[in-house]
Image (cartoon, rainbow, N blue to C red):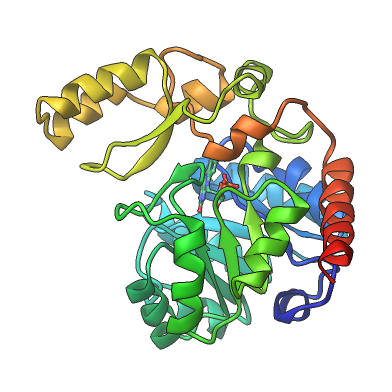
Length: 312
Ligand SMILES: Cc1cc2nc3c(=O)[nH]c(=O)nc-3n(C[C@H](O)[C@H](O)[C@H](O)COP(=O)(O)O)c2cc1C
């Protein structure tokens, strides 16, 4: 797999980033990805400041390779987390779910590289104005919170490539070396992968969540909750209650009540398969085994290299 602007920007071997994922991306998953030549991100979105501090310390002990932290900007204790990230000497931050102008300058002043996640060209241009170092463009096949316009990765990446010259990571639906190659052919400089790593051995998601996801097909997830924050959900009992409410025009407050507290924690971390919020991407349909990160990374790189040869 070739060096790109992304491998140069972060000082990594392969242009493969493991997206920060609530309840999955602790120091174990992030350090395994970094040690295998990619860039691991700690997912701060599900961590209190004390928990994040602990994960950062363990991360420093587990790898001497580059790594970063993902910070969703709607985070309730954001000021505390920002100070913590700066004081702990984190070098790379991926911000998501908010405006790129919010924290980029502050992180840059502290010598931190900033990457922002977007889902359309308008926000790509805002990222350029805000001076971010790179962007992740995420199609709505992706697991987690998604763009409300429902743009697919295949449609999005060429548009973003035209809209900005920033180093570009493609995300959404990528689970193979072939898909990485396709993303690069469309103009990406690397990829951010979530779903595949969420189901790895090192992910902190519960075994019940992982096992359930391994048996899902291509139609078993849907985008829901546009009135709160568009999220791709596994079709389970909770999803059916949300869908029924959305179909009759329920407002955001009612949807929040149906979700209840800690819905993602219940689904992903505690393995409440039917009544928890189960976040995973469409590409889950192709994953049938829990594997260690080292093997996943090797398979991605080997397939990419092999297919590249056949295309020459
Ligand atoms: C379980 C799960 C939780 C996620 N949590 C976050 C998060 O906290 N912050 C974020 O920016 N993206 C989050 N994502 C999105 C991923 O970082 C990544 O961009 C996305 O999964 C890529 O698409 P894929 O799932 O098709 O690989 C999450 C994805 C999953 C599957």
